[in-house]
Image (cartoon, rainbow, N blue to C red; front, side, top):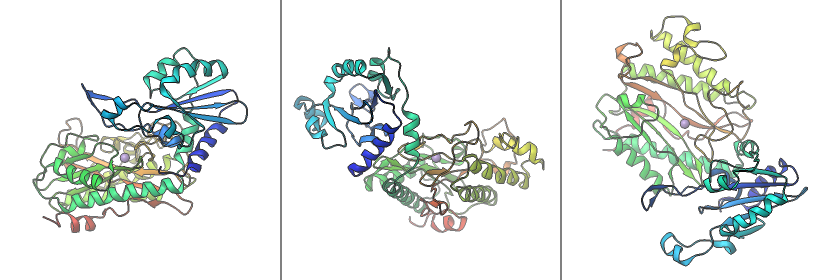
Length: 430
Ligand SMILES: [Mn+2]
């Protein structure tokens, strides 16, 4: 298992400290999802479930029961079944599950019988809903509380071991980008860059943490572009937003580079502005700062830069908007938040999303966030006006940043980022 038993137990202890006496807590893992007919999507365990017990087979339910101060944990798992194992692989089974960080293991087939008794025995019911349709329907008639707020708070602060895995994920992600930069050339297909990136993941015994985004030219201005089916023309930028997982822990890195290895002047102007905003955003990742300070920092630089480039008239109030809501005209070109928490999920739990009330969570040592401002000048946009020299330019720069009491640590720092670094490396291998 990726973590010592003691680390899982500590996570469970911290959860159960928040749960009152006479409670039962249900934590299910994901159902298998079907793509079509007999073919299922690759199974990925639910992140809460992974976090609490590390069990990777499908169909499990983790149950905590708490009488007074003490609690017990039972892991319900798929039992051994040769006829099914012939097709799907050997299961760990009930006996094997006892090696996992739980008090007891039971067969999932007996879950419903146990459930009736548990619901009679305990006053408070907690369950993670929206993960297992079956569990949700079994608890349909119950009054159920949500354990997520407690778990989310725990998950946002990473342990040294979690940080180690996230650093490895960021390193593999950086190496993948370097490899793609080296092999870039005019006319290369977006899918070919995707293949370079994802083969690096697989060769590192990792896999993507979200479908890779590879957008050349105007496609770079589509925030969640995923078809990756166009060729990238000489003179265009390519934006690559991709990441991988190590023991479930994600990296999420974006770089933008000229496919022919040389930025044009307009590309340079936009790239330089986004980079300045991104570096200032990273510098604001200080423990004790509010979440919103990062977005405030990047937004101010972007807004001033758009004025300096002549894209807007010199009216900062209008470009930046309300100083709290930051809802000004800059949003025509920078329409997303500056970052998100990163962990077992790419868009990890803990809040810190655009549209949060107040200033969002406070940054603390052990949190990992992304910092990813961007500017997008889609040639296809008929709703906005900007100088034609910027048409078809989409730039986003994203790093994974660990908050420490000594200041921000960029986990993805191996990935080339300055204009000089990028121009040196792009196309350096045929
Ligand atoms: Mn991201």
